[in-house]
Length: 279
Length: 279
Image (cartoon, rainbow over all chains, first blue to last red; front, side, top):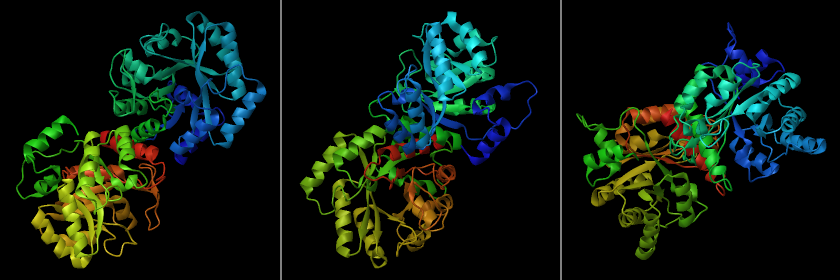
């Protein structure tokens, strides 16, 4: 993040955290200066990218690519970890200079899982969960959002997802709920489900809390993960939409190819996204 | 290279090769359709990037990053190689799908070294050498250019280079020679020598045969190699200049950081360059 941007966020937000910016940005009558149309976007990593690595290895890769914002995945720190385990993990990330800005994606199929997710998020110290609650748990999750004052960003997962294939499947179920109920648009799964992510970003801007960026090799159900810039997603349009809505959350790369040796592909993707941003 | 671009080059050039395009492009009264202002540029790799790796390892890295154009460095195939050694190396690159579009950088401090370089280039099968002849050998090298019909692109190497610190130090010595005498602008060394590469590209367009792209962390003599996009070179301006002059040669990434483990940095740099190009 640029110093200028950091300054603006800190000035506007105090201690509430950058994750609130999208909400502020869409509030009626809000005329505060936000990200402008050429401002850099904040880049992060979605923890699933490091599914085959431990915390130390993940930190090393993040430092190498100089991206220090993380959406922590439960693979690396299980939701049922003890307080001591959570504290130890947080200490490692802190020492590595990593900013854990959210946890997720966390699946919630029972009330107990919803409870556990919010308790976990609070212990980790984040103000947002990226998650997937079953339909019948959405209202219960909303109660927890209010109780903990922790936002919930529901994640779309493409055509084979029985619950939330496309961004609209998230939006339509949360649009009338508490404004801290929102979405994490996964641009790859969105396109696989037939929704241009650059359109979804604009349509659902008032509830867009997080975004998973990636590329896929075909705009079809069986589109596969590929290095950003080599596939079919129009990253320039995605960035254009994010700037248009003055998105001030994180754009987290989720790289799901070569998962045993992902660093070159992550690096190429990061480079591409930054290049389009500066192009 | 896109099929469209390949088609245009093949149509325009027959068998003379893409490397002649810059010369054709600058010929007075030339109105043939060349690269337009949003056309993709051809990306390659400068072989020095792989200084610590053998041919097989280099090919594997090039395939991984999907960049298949190579400026072959004598580290991997010495100038004094036997015909059999050259043939074996060429076969490996061909099998790997690699297009060797030039050789270099080759230093030439004696007439014998000039002779050897041109014989080597002919055996490798390229129509251009990126090289560094001593001043007193420039005229002799020009004779060889005519004799072999192989172009010579002289490479600038920054403030500590006694011969060609800046692009102007090359241009001023070849501008009145045979039009096959030209330059390979190294954008990093150019900026370290105080010349904005985006300006040099426009100034010396009629003799620009090749370009080494990279980034450096400071616009100063001691500026160090860094992943493209993290440093001080304005890649957007460089690409703008290349498009303005309708450059149709190769832009070869020369990555000189982390040389024992360069793949992530090369990948990030490639991604960044492509991103700016598409941004």
